[in-house]
Amino acid sequence: MKKLILSALIVSLALTLQARENPFIMYDENSGQTIETPNRINTQTDWEETNFINSYQNKNNKTTKQAESKSTVKKQEEKTYSKKEVDSLILKTRYQNEQKTKQLLNQVKNKEPEQIVYVKPRTDINEELLTQNILPFIKLGYSDNKLIVESDDLISKKFTINKENKIVVDFKGRKNFTGKRTLLDTSNFKAITTGNHSKNGFYRVVIELNSRPVNFDINYLENSFIISAK
Image (cartoon, rainbow, N blue to C red; front, top):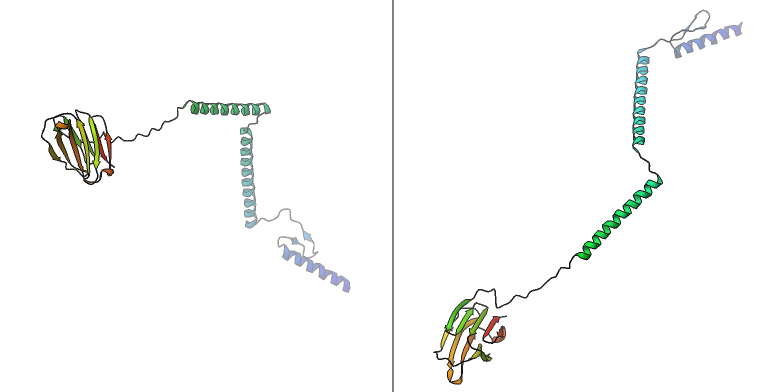
């Protein structure tokens, strides 16, 4: 009798626990047996979970299809080459490079080398000079840095006087004239003087400098001379 009562209590406790764990399970209170229900009662939570699962699956299916479509297009775009085609491309590229190299070599070979010419500026030209006739047969041209004397006769003698800062030039010829001194308003040349020595067969031209003669370059020609400041 005690065993029967204990068994009934255990069954009742189990059913109570089962009912608490799952409130939707129905059972017979007299017999204690579970009553199977054909359909589970759906709640609002169940409906939301179902919609979420379906939406997630549809999204995954769509992404998968797009990826597969892109992969298929990429595979269609990729082109494969045979060994013969690859060898042909290599030969073509090599030939083009060789032709370009030959063209460059021909251009370098046929190009004339550039000649660099250094021209030393002449001190006797391309400089504006003041000109005048000292005598009918003597012409003078001068600037601050240059002086030119030209005569109808040849030079016979030339020398310098360092202490007096003078350059002396004698010309052949018996000329009758009165000697004179002409001032030159320049930074290097002070004056020019002419003298008559017809008895001795020459006449003289003297250039007075503002510094020693060694500070000048003198270029003597047949019937003229050029003095340039260094």
